[in-house]
Image (cartoon, rainbow, N blue to C red; front, side, top):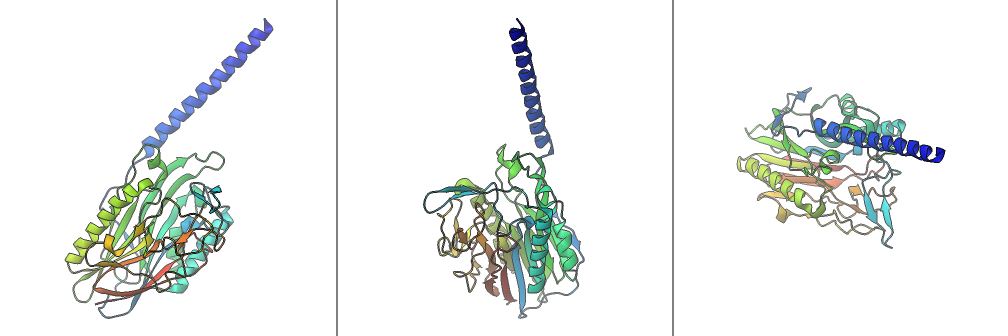
Length: 369
């Protein structure tokens, strides 16, 4: 009899635990859904610390694009959402969902800031800049750049805003506010956030970014405008369907501005292999399934990719399913610039050996014709 009573107590206890777990899961899903929203398209952006000097035709200018990887991706870092396969068929999966420590996040944030400061370009286009996020220990990376580069104006747009994410359970990714930061030594007349199409499936929408690009406008002394686009396209996109829609929107925007007679420069993380760099670098890994090419033939009329002079010597992005080791990780050129044919331009991939990010910067030198 006592055994039966004990079994009943155990069953009731287990049932209560199961019920509590189900209630928690349902409540968490409701919480995530209630806090999910897409940022409005064509959202006006605030310009901070604006400058007065305007651009001139025929002058030399420079720009840099750099995905800083929210201050987490030094050489020892791998990311939990990334998976891949070694040449011998061994499957690998990344480890961390946050920076390895606050000290590490500060080191990488400061290192990336110093790189941009030393390059001293006229424009800087930065991606994955956290303003408040569990994954980067609530370090305000936007503020860090603005403080160090105090002689620049800045425009910021969110492209990742998420309530507290419990996954992975051993080290939750947490809540995130992160985005695109554009900095300039020249007058900005306006800034706009353009929303990209994204995967809105129930699970994916909570973990993927609210992808976008930003448009900042700069007056030129011939009454035209430089239209500078800071771009970050989707990465986790099986089959490339979403990226195709995103490219369609980017092409439409570039074409419209070019037809107005404006100068167009697009910089950023395209999450496509640019200029035929899918398999040019030594690697001990197979080419990931997510890799797609982007070539001039894919772009609107009058636009071209500025292939860096060292495009086959220095990659700009490395795989994050394993820590970085030169010649072992898969690498390609995913970062760079597209320009309209009224812009004369050359580019260089800056070899920082992925010291503070899973990306290397790319520097553009250009003239407006």
